[in-house]
Image (cartoon, rainbow, N blue to C red; front, side, top):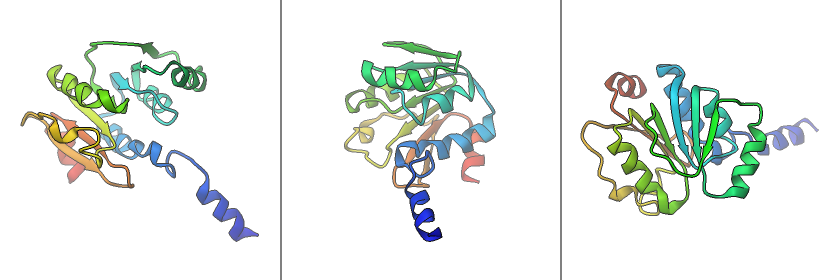
Length: 169
């Protein structure tokens, strides 16, 4: 009986057991170093990301194209008063999280680089060709840290040497 209960528990989808929430490993490490941030822009809202990120910033701007998905996430985050839902933006932020539709990912990363965003977090880094991350033009001022805790990798491009040193250290 106990073995069956433990087996069920292992299959339970939680952010730590579900690769859809794998970016949270990197975010936990990052926020332990930086503390909470002022503004985060999230491209592609999510059940594991939006509420979590809203808990680590004063202002979260979520950009999502799929209205049905957006409504689902809004329902889960109704208790948050620091989330702004937008269709498009050009907002300057302390951190940009890219986990949107495939066709937009490369553009969103390059846009964040052009805005000189301090921290750019990119989900699904292990799929370089599929998301065209291999075609990114990343300036030398950015240091790249890749979290490989689970099968879905998450990358951080950061301009802050102290943050990078603590992550690799």
